[in-house]
Image (cartoon, rainbow, N blue to C red; front, top):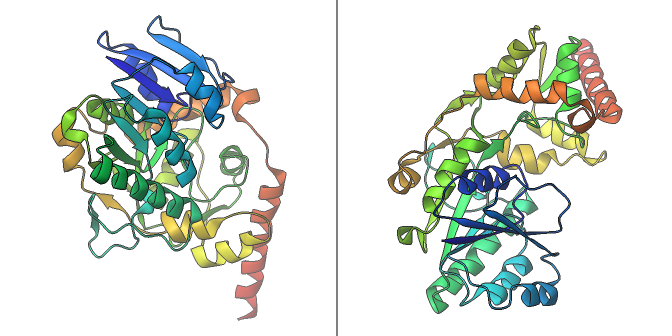
Length: 341
């Protein structure tokens, strides 16, 4: 069988590519700009192109057909409209990577299922994903376009640790604050629940859908079974670093207001996503991919990530003094406010 990955070198897609490259039944093609190295495998082939250059891509794909096309970098409706034009009649399955942030939060039921209402008034990113899903399902219903939709939740790999509050350069500056014994911002009181998935676990669920006729016209969230509070998540990070955590709890609304003028979109990422407890019903993905489970729990995953981050300073240790100073100002302002009351 033949698979085409649009992207294929990101946090979740790279894990899927690596897993599929070990399967002798699959021939893997990657379409991207060629800016990142590919896994070393004779089953992986490269098409160097910018997917946004539709005419060039159409020429390079001329005469090619695929069993599955995997879209990982489609963020707006015009992206999936382009894919529909490019791959209609050329693939037996088109898997679109949406987002679990598109689910309405808080939902009417604590347990989120694939049929949970899709709505997010706080985050444009999520609304764009919903619009993409709606377009693709319309093409499935009206024109038979063989779409499968997947909705990852918070998936991470060895290059970064999952956090609720961080700056524009990722997780490193928060790691440094924890190492140095400085107070670390945690949204809310830290007791809301969250689901984390290591990317190799996500790949198990995803590849179980590839080439599976029962997945056509369906949506699946793919997330691990482990549920942790944010206090537990940050405590595990500190434990892995061998230091004591000094949490500083701040309401998500305050963080959103304080971060807005500095370009930190905590309205979307917190109010519209991470500040709300999420528990996923994973029974649907497990019916089609029975091996999907949490093989890498967070206490192991965070150590894998920290080992890599600490040993790859040039790649992973991007200082963010602006965010560090912003954290200090938030803490100072709240401490002074408490003193005045």
